[in-house]
Length: 117
Image 1: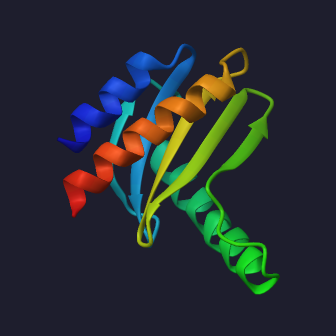
Image 2 (image 1 turned 180 degrees about the vertical axis):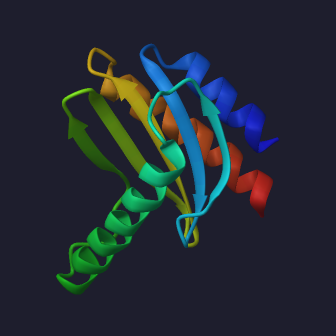
């Protein structure tokens, strides 16, 4: 089911290149899409950043992080926590609609939560 959710996410977001579902250690559970990048390596690296950002915002009393946007020369990547030990990373082209991608990510998160619980 996870593969289907990721495939549907990529198909529903114009400019989406790849998606990866990660556990809390940065290990890839599933990934889909076409990418010349090593998305498993990037996913693990960005998961570490997400953990650090979440820890800092909690210590500062700013609440929890719902998404992190990594803006890069080649495009953007949006990482969202799914539940405490899982997160979802979506790679987008530079021309992709990030607001529309966020809406589709929320839908995918709802489906993933149902699948893993």
